[in-house]
View: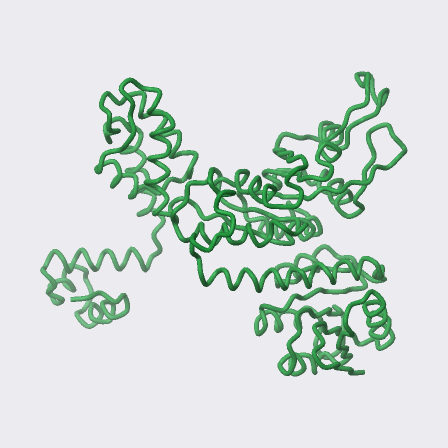
Length: 459
């Protein structure tokens, strides 16, 4: 079976013709334009090539080309298209594989019509959002930020952060659940507050929760609340985080630290949009936007089965990655000056700037602890500084940390990087004489020539 309406934005692929007709009817009755349908998976790539689809719904088990292989082919050749996998078996391994291959969502048959329509609409919204972000990525300019005042608390001059700000402005007005990733100390919670501030929920609560703090007992009471008499100490009704954040935003920091046994409880609330207070038999509906953050690679945690795949794709409708400070070199000195003014004004006389030597040293340090490490470094240094300009000598931890960094950099160089450096040292020692360098290195001259060409070593 094959039907390709002109200008269709959705393609449905399934070897069951009856299911194709049913899904098409469901979408059209919901006001979604007529989708294209095809039952022969071998025809899909050719059809996509001739049309401009935004979304492809793919059955997992099909003759000729199965859904997983087809998903991989589509994502490789047309990465802008949003793909959703549909399968008759609810297997975690299949869900993980689909997500790793780039699937937006993973549905199990029989698919509820209402759920299907909701997921299709969200997927199309995601397609539009991605196109908008792609256009923004080409600019990466702070001058293009529509709401610069919203970002006033974040000190940033590096173009990589301009792109982050553009992403925030693109996703904030939606109700997408967003995952913010980045190393510890990069400012994930601060960025989540800006997302909330720029959303239509700005005048509602913003609740931030560190997920690492909860075990089985504390989690349910803290998130769902309880009614009077639910347990011995429950002398009155108590609201939980979900209820407290009603209409607003709930920020789940370090989401990957949540115990696996509790991830299912969180998932159920996100799926059902309702929960029960401890001790209550009455459910409560919720309208809460979820923002989550982690300093780990969540997809890697899913692969290692430490984080549920189904919870991952419920949370990650959109992902924003904050680059570490070492990749934002232009931000180091503005941030350092900001912290000097913040802490130095408490001194008499006040310290309001840093020396050129210290600037150079800070620029050469990788800051594994990111902005938080820089702030702590400056806060400690101003206590020791006797002049009005902060000097390198007052930042006592810096020389030791730079030495550790240098050793670490050497320790973790690849074999090719080590070989290149070794050849460069030999050439430098003999003023570029390749025959003498070959003798030092214990290799023939022809090999030295090949290595010089391989590594692009200039005269």
